[in-house]
Image (cartoon, rainbow, N blue to C red; front, side, top):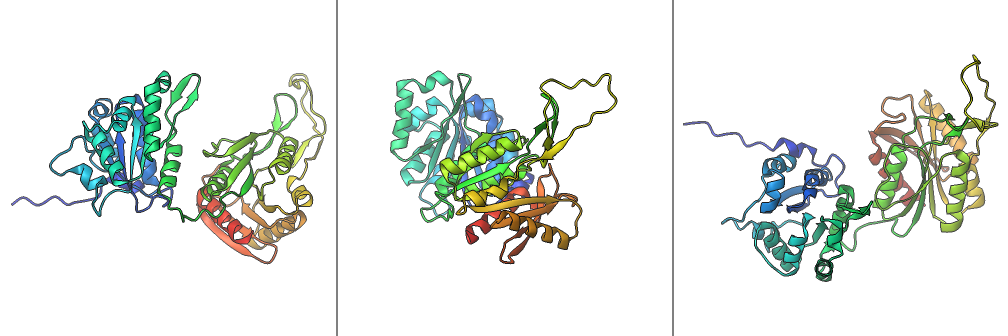
Length: 423
């Protein structure tokens, strides 16, 4: 007899949960139809997996002409359903069975498929999955992908409205340069998370205004040259995402940086320390956020005078620049807005743990901050431009929490959780 093959998990399943467990234990049926936007489907499926989901792919016939099922199998670790068989896959995964999936996601969804679903037509695996899921009351999300003028067709618009009327969530594209671009994978994942949250889901900062500063500031020597630092903005953007996850209404005052703001966050762009100071105070005056998280790496020095023209390099061997301190933004926040819960940030270099904590406490006292987060950028993995961080979180009443080295989103979630418990 031949030996039986050993059953092993697909290697692609190794990514499950690498970005967290927001979708842990959830099964998502990811249906795909014949739009060129299907090239984004593997990325979306894997992002769902990285947040903990199990993904069951379903493909229409036209979808298989654009994206080979082997690639979908590789990206999800599960062989896609391309036709309905005697296994009655639509019943097994979205019907009235105890092992049914938690949500049906149709991304991308063509105008043709949307019209058929709105009319209750079942002529393939995707439309049959849709009818079954809707009839069973399962959450359904449709992500349309079509040429921009098609959205203006009155029947297409009516079909989308018909889906909304029966409880289907529609994630519309963004229109840029006259072209409709399918919703970003990150936005779709957020909508999936929202759809799966029960009414009692804990969103402890729901309705709370949170203002976050992020990135680095620059100070101009002349119109071309600047003084700055190496902050990437990654920590600030992780904090924005963590606050958004907790339900907050988030505004980010963002200097220079390479990290992209998360979806659903309002962004105010600035460059210099003075511009950031003005923007922060304008936001405090206009929106009165309850929480301010001052995570930006604000430069400490600026030239006393800025040259209005580029300083020539020829004919001179040395350039002397006189510097003066920049405004200390965090020192004025509690003074002018005492009810604000202030989280200060402090970066130091190559200090002992005792010195690091003592320095941070002194800085928090000067700012009358409610919390201060401090890291030593000399420590491996905790410096500028890294994807990880290690911090100490300190409060004025002797509170101290060590946040061990981990990805910056994990650190941010710990900080936001502490804000929730102490504000």
